[in-house]
Length: 82
Image (cartoon, rainbow, N blue to C red; front, side, top):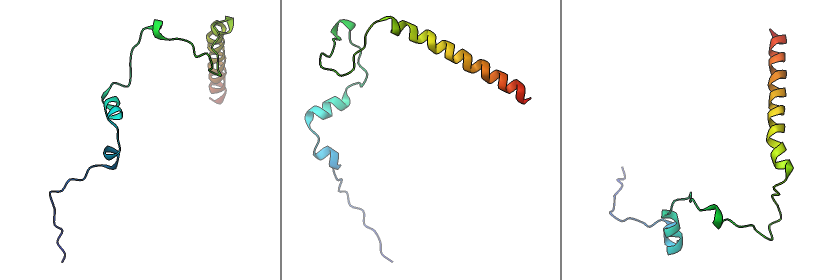
């Protein structure tokens, strides 16, 4: 019967071998950062634009109406199934 011999050799992980100091420091930082709104600026060449117009204020109300309609119909279908 073969016996396995344990050696005291510890191997460094592959990722640790090729990791930079910058990526190690970044890994230790918190992933969620709070920044002041004043530091947020627009991305001039970004393909998607967010326009603060009337549609942004209508959308939440529209979603509420759709949800209400869905729940009303669901309740109706449950009552019919009984």
